[in-house]
Length: 569
Image (cartoon, rainbow, N blue to C red; front, side):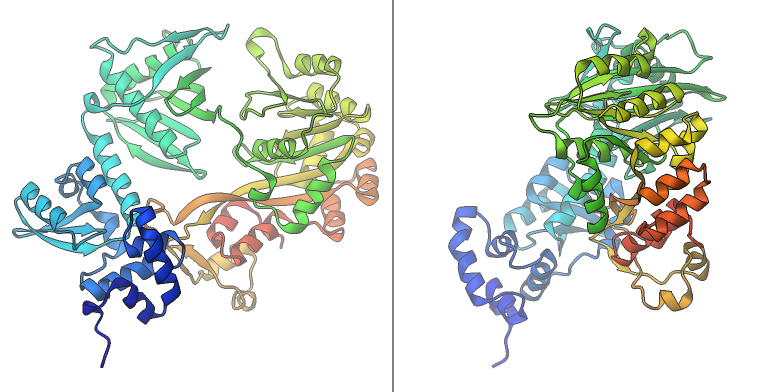
């Protein structure tokens, strides 16, 4: 007698499909009462099956079609919002499209008669259910209802933020949000910051165009446009940002910098504000810094096993300098704070001088340089010397004075961590000489020089095989013969990654250990090409090679490697 899934229990279908065992089904049946879930959901929670396997089994059992993820990328928001967001979230449904007098609806539980009847009454239409996975539905609901919320009237924008401006003496001044004239502007700015933090954005760009304002968030290193408020609200938003960050409201011709402390019900965020006049008006860029506990560790940053061993070795030395280089936003501060978190203990006095303090580390003395009141890097570092430090983090070497103090710290028995803007590890060394530090001092003090970048990771939910074009292979320095041995991947784009094909970032690194050979070359004043050749002979993997390695592992794309690194050819 042939097996008919329509007359079988879900567990039996899954066992028949070979995706789970009878023993696992029995275990799920025993535990499902404790979880308050159905059999399939329990198997999923226990990790015995995947969401895709559950959907396939439900499709066989119930005969409902499974919604294709491609269809979820281009839904009509006007149709989606026919089902109110609270109802959609609670009952796990989303409206897809209308056909004549029928609404096609994606549901996690299409056999639920109560939800089916409620939808019929709510919409006044016949309901045709389709199957959708719970995690995909969650992302889809967030994508569309967030768009619906942000495109609705400003007066309807409700958030949990209490805006607080911080003056030079760190006194907090609450912004009055009750005035009718300012309410739309305050609510709009509140909405922008709320959505930015929800999206894990690092920066907010508010820029005036000819007919409207463009708001973009930097997510995973790339800017995304999120809304276009009316241009009439732009000046009001800029003025509010200026008030909150204690800047001159009347000054519209010169750039201004400030900061805002934002308190939410969940966490506190420090916002660095930059306002620059442009031909169409003033542009606001806000850098979001989380005041919460630093959550990274060296093992989660993307180091290969050998590079992590090298980095571990040098951050535990008693003295000398470790420099991390790269452009703004390449993760330099994150790496060094992860290093401090790794090596801090009760026996060491660790002091940092930063501008700004991006991460808060418990048990470490952190000093924020403030140019406006004369607390420069140099002045702060000179005071640090009298604080009996063992390890010093200097946020950035910007000039000869800071570099000179860093060198002197390292030569007097201190371990120094710092950052520098340079293209790669060899040019970091020559950059120190350019700043004015004599080669013999550079050679004597350096332990480790590391360049790094952050590449976007392929979204694990929509990863697929990819055949690169000849131009891409040429740009990446990969021959056609080499390409035959590589399994190239890319993200197709889905609701999980907001149709970008990427989700999250990982580091690529280039490390130069300053051994006796490299030290002699620095002392002799050799150029960066000679230093690079010596470093490669001693086992250095270039940024490009590190990126290619991540690509071969299926973590990133060939386009990311080409965009962020230069071929070694």
